[in-house]
Length: 369
Image 1 (tube, rainbow, N blue to C red):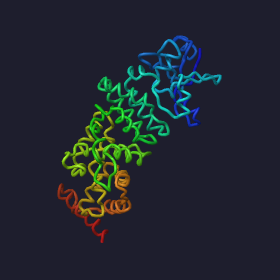
Image 2: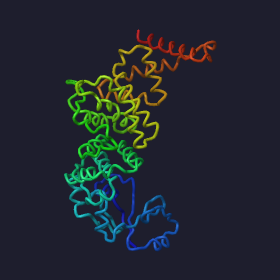
Image 3: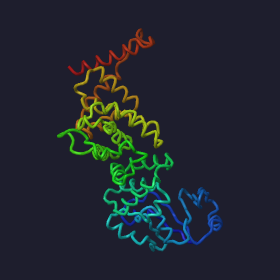
Image 4: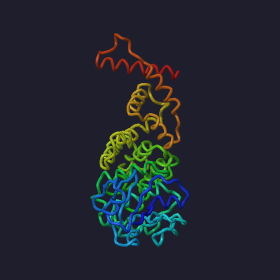
């Protein structure tokens, strides 16, 4: 029985990076022999044998030969095995691609067999921005899309890859590679034409909607919820009438339902879907924070506070328009939360709510003077 450390763990070891996940490949043994050796292992694989043992995953080859097994992996830099004696078993391109920082498919067939690898490849570029997609990867992803193989993927799997990408170092690369390879449809179809739509008039914008959204995502890296808000904030610009360009009047309100529909389509959690919707709704309003009426400030602050994304919204505005009024919003939020109704004004239904809003607005207005 041979047990190899497999995939990304080998890649990260060779790159001198921390290894967070360790998966193993077992060869030279049957399922029964493995269980006799490790009776505490629990089988979890459906289509082929996969076992969990002490929190680690042990899988068996899907192919008859090791070289075929390596070609069935997603990317060449993940198609490597490390034996216990330190010897490497690699895809023919693995080491060259590792040293040249290249993302290349292990084979065309591996992507045709598992089209979800399109999203996995995009996520790897978000995770490892110092790597570059090889033209072979670009063409492979384009072919998968052209064959319509993305249309029937499980929505939750697309959502899982997306959520992982939101946590990466350069999350904008996820959307960039999907766009470059015609893989936005059907899951991110709102952005299909975004490369051809100016983000806004000069001198405020110098790029298209897609690249602007990606840059904002990159600026918010490290906070997955904020990154998702960055992805969604200008989604309404993708339906701006041509005659209105390069301006996008009303794109914030137009983007609310679009952001929500995108999140629901890929089965994102409710909290993330709500954050994307609110990012689209409020980012333009918050960018004019100093000009807002006290009542508008109260409505926005309370809405974002209830959603738990107030600080994130102002981070988004800073990344989007280089406006940083968080210190003012935080100050006003403290004032708003400190307001209390007198006992005789409570429990009066809508009248109590209206009176509380009035008092909160007065506290903000007083602070402005």
